[in-house]
Image 1 (cartoon, one colour):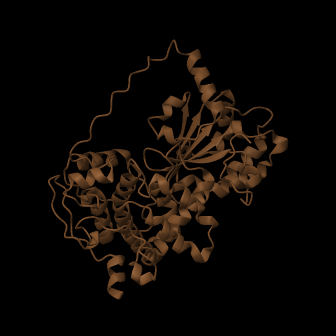
Image 2 (cartoon, rainbow, N blue to C red):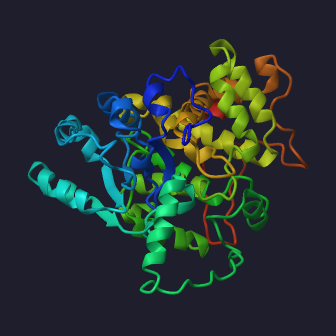
Image 3 (cartoon, rainbow, N blue to C red):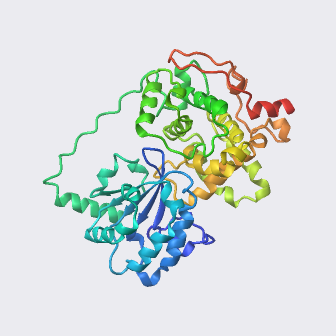
Length: 433
């Protein structure tokens, strides 16, 4: 079936609806918020689709994200008299989505709106709050989305792409001429975002843990472990860009100046998301997708085996990050962020496919794998002799055999200062061993 996710299992609780590909999760927007797309052209004729099941599936999908800020992109093209739900159903559906769903919906982008949408808006306007109305933005062309989200991550149906091309050609006389994309500039010597781990190592005197990661983790360990909803909130895009600019210019950043503990949390996620290759690498993507097929009692061992294939540098950085997230989960009584909640936030920041974005059905194994790394951190990242297995961690190259958590931090030429880290769970585990 066109639009069906090849990874979708027939055991999915909403397989009858999900198989049409109406809903997709498509990466993050410029603010780091998860994007959910709704494609009307994927809706079959009304007699072939139970609209009540569609509503339940929509709520089932959004339930995975409503605790965090999120964005919806609605592709209107393809809605017609054959597949259009009744106005009564639309009204009852709107009422079904209570404050839980509306509170953290930060933007609703309506692409290719028609007069029907405008009529519908007037009908529902009395039911909508002014605050919700301000979240809705109309886009006549797909190109207008570039400013707001990572366009290449969107899963856009071919029908919508063809329709957009048709609109563009009809109005090409009024469209500005296409501009040539300038060649990419080489990164600054002090660049921290959007460059590889190897580049950061080379520019930071051989340190394996990137400065931004070390600094944000240290700050959050000291001041944010018990903050409710840590990593769930977004931050002002202007603030995020300002901090990125400071880091990229090699200037120090003092998070105390911003007065918001969620800002370093957003910076940490942004750093991971902007790596040229995911921390867990493109090569491990397919292996990780298979984690749900592994018997529960063997999944921890499977995780260790998958991590064997990681480059040494990636493994050390991942171990450092997971040690911190494990510490966050240990304070879930206060911060409400257990390993499952953290996995929902970090899953797609640690791994994504080399082409396009992860499908909706891929989120289950990706989040499960991340949850296992956090929940069973000490077992997965422990020394081989402690687990009774052969060495699963990549061998250390050269003379850097000491764990990074125990390395003496240095002040670098970039102007970024590295404060001393409190003891990590990994260090504590070694002491017990």
